[in-house]
Image: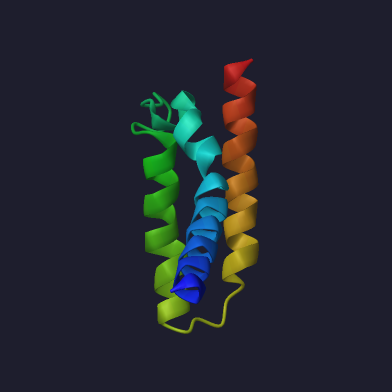
Length: 86
């Protein structure tokens, strides 16, 4: 019984560590507020962009540099958000 409890505790700790890495998304209200420039929340924009451009290319085994293109676009979007937020 002790081994089972120890294993369960270890699994719970791993889960908490992973979830804690996403607290910035949960705690940053600006990510969940509609951005006038995007017409939606930044979080929704990033999610849709990932699904439409990155996920599709990966699933289709596209030969293009998906990660490089994504990083260029991500940098441009973050720079724009920083510029607008002051």
